[in-house]
Amino acid sequence: MILIENFKLYLTLPIIGQLSGLSFNQPKFCPEPTWNSNGTIFIANNTIKGYPDSIFVTTNNSIYVVAQAIPQIYIWLNNSVNSTITTTDTVPFPKTIFVQNDNELYIERGTFNKRTVEKWILNRNNSTPVMNIPAPCYNIFIDTSNNLYCSLDLEHKVVKNSLDDDDTTPIIVAGTGLSGPASNNLILPSGLFVDASLNLYVADYGNHRVQMFPPGELHGITVSGDRSINTTIGLTYPTGITMDGDGYLYIVDYYKHRIVRGKSDDFRCILGCRTTIDIAANQLLEPRHMAFDSYGNIYVVDRNNQRVQKFSYEKLSCEPRTTITHTTSTPVISHSTKTLAEYLIQCLMFLMLYI
Image 1 (tube, rainbow, N blue to C red):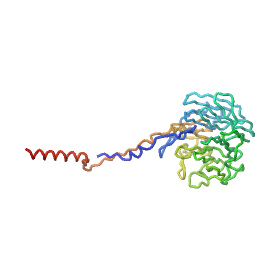
Image 2 (tube, one colour):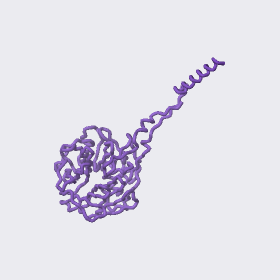
Image 3 (cartoon, rainbow, N blue to C red):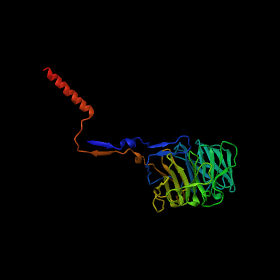
Image 4 (tube, rainbow, N blue to C red):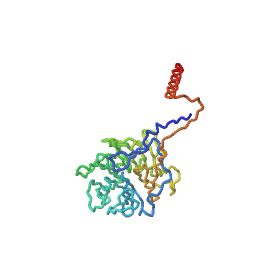
């Protein structure tokens, strides 16, 4: 007799899904997803002029990469093989980009101490200022309520304003402007993410932690790294952060050359987990940023290797599991078979009465 176990449970789990209404990918995975530890080079160092800083992947899988040297944005539209290059007259060079509707680019420009975040329409020569800031943004993020956030790393704070009005003056939503380790302080804040409940997550670079600020709160909760509320994982200068559709955080651990995944008290390294650093396919060198495509693959800005690595999502890690068990027990007649046998016996006895 052969029994098939554990099939129904895993069959009902989605392999991968995508939250709707977002301009970027926020996949939903099975409980224990894995990615190929050997990355493939999406952009090589002979393609990028200088060092890549950030990446944005839209839900249509258009890929935008910001690189320094001369101000350039590399763009691959809708899974295209060849890139186009957009050059902007920004000084100092922008480190970040956010994209909406596949053609609205949010970048910054201006002098070092007087900057403006602007909305550019792809293939047009005009722009609209949306936020005035005193220093460069390390990261830009737009939440589901159309608020724009900017991490002013050199000013140790995060600011935001609404894109639904004409006011370009932001308000402070995290940090005091003074560096420090307190719950209301930041040191060189870097990556940003805002979830559907408008909780703000900040990669607090100089404090080696990730802070979460509920809406309207200026005191953050440490969810990962030094002095976290749960025992999680040590971080060393985190620079990037994002979240999947199930609420798992993905942290770019810059100085430990790896990507960390987790939530609550369950954090683990998923990419670049070897202790040595090198240019090998399974290693990173001071990564700065990451993003998902619509298939769940992870793109990592491997900055000091001057490349962008693509780590493929291993769908087999979510395949239904089956266990085949052999047994020597006596076969049991099913209820339907038993009923048929009784019926035949009754028919035979009825015929014998009339013979």
